[in-house]
Length: 120
Image (cartoon, rainbow, N blue to C red; front, side, top):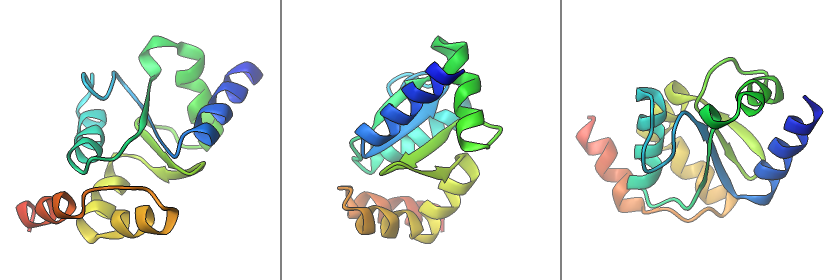
């Protein structure tokens, strides 16, 4: 498991935004992964996607690494942010915008506002 932990740590530290998900950002393979990838894609966030279905050691390793039992998992600047429910809440409250701004992550503010308007 240490190889997986090293690989995960390298991935989250070398990329500003990383989504560990089922499937890929262009072809999510579960509804929760699709929702988070959809938010990031719509907001124009540049992020790395890691398909946990492609590697069982990464799939279990990310759960151990974050001490979080579910996938997807979003990391921003090396920090675990949360899964689908947390990212959805943060998007709708504007907290995700604030996080991106505080960490210097580029995103489309107008798109973020459109998501909130559509869900008001």
